[in-house]
Image 1 (spheres, rainbow over the protein chains, first blue to last red):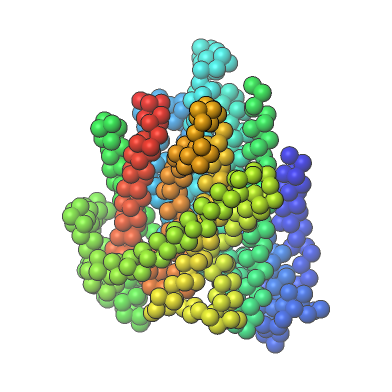
Image 2 (image 1 turned 30 degrees about the vertical axis):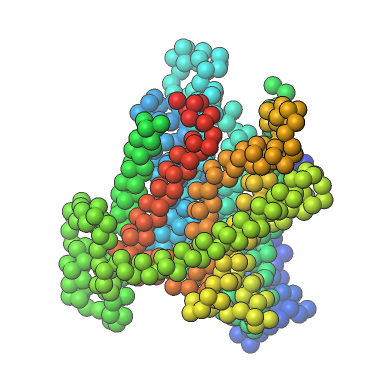
Length: 264
Length: 312
């Protein structure tokens, strides 16, 4: 658990303070210095427009991690709402909600996101929309599953007998028992969102230039694979480190919760 | 059994029609003028309103949503994907040509994934917690975090640029398929290793194993006849997810390696707003995944009879 807390702090720091540590403006073009290798002036070199790669990388953290956070929270809200509606809303609502979930799950999420973002026109809003509407299904399944298992517990039955409205039962009696499992799903989806954002950025459907986003930095770097191969290493490495760290934190969290549940 | 199969089939039909309607609605409501985009892709020149309106009428974009939807769905039911809005050629031959590039690549990647992950998982679980086990888990975790497009670029850098052993761009010879297949295969191996490993560990913990051992059944037979089938259940379960993962990787890998497969086909279709191409890829993908999930559901009811019982 301590490692998870440390990691969250590290990522928040990276997105929050990282850009302030950047030595240069990430969008300033400096053609005479284009495609220069690592030096004392530019620690990681410059890209095809002479922009400082280290600065772009540090600012990119805010784009990639910030957007991934927004997307994973939006899809959590969508998914939890649908899952709880399925669990609380009776048989018809359950059937409709779960078949909708099946429909979205039947399709590879990233391919769906590519189609949606591509057709809506490249840009940050399409990116958020595309990855959110293709990322809520796991939350819905978990929320429904736990919702159904909570249904027969004493305090829920009592609340129902007391005549509380469904939304209030969902808010005060279901949500607290959902939070641990939803958090585990969230870590996984947060990591997936980082990968999705950079994949769409790499295809040119995501965050648009001149904004520094790791995937679109890779797209820029790809053309110069022969002349400055190092340029392509950094943004990819940043993605890998973040995703790996979040996945490991998610595993630790899941194990901790499993241990907590075990004695019962 | 027949009743469950019927239920699953009904569910598959619901999912398929849902996908068809959603895709069509998305295409129809996408911002920008699709007629203009199609005209641009066709003529690639300055366009007058007349030309755009002509294209609009020709492609059928001047109809109402439901008119256009039924006009598209009718032929689709007989597996006729219609003609491309941009080139005017029938969709199916072009689509099939791109699939013929994608299919072998997907199979090669699955093969590479299995060849690496199965022995690795078996070796790792010989002694859980050992150095080898931790090495395998660590490798798989790192592999899961590496995006396919980045791995692809690194492989190009090493094997095509630095060592000049293999070609990187295009699909003209079988050698061109090696790097893309490796890129995808390593990703598949990373996720399969984890799943097979935990499958074996869970199978080992089953309460019936000590009883079988006490009856004097050899270790070899315990592994082959009791642990292996049990460990196969989670692998079959996640096969659908694995296939989805593979397709996601394929789109990006084909773009990186400049292979004219299904992924490139899709990205091109999106960029040129070729309605019928986008729809064809989406519907075909949904069909494949619905069928795969249906088959998986049926298979694991057969290999694990307990699943049918608890659901009934």
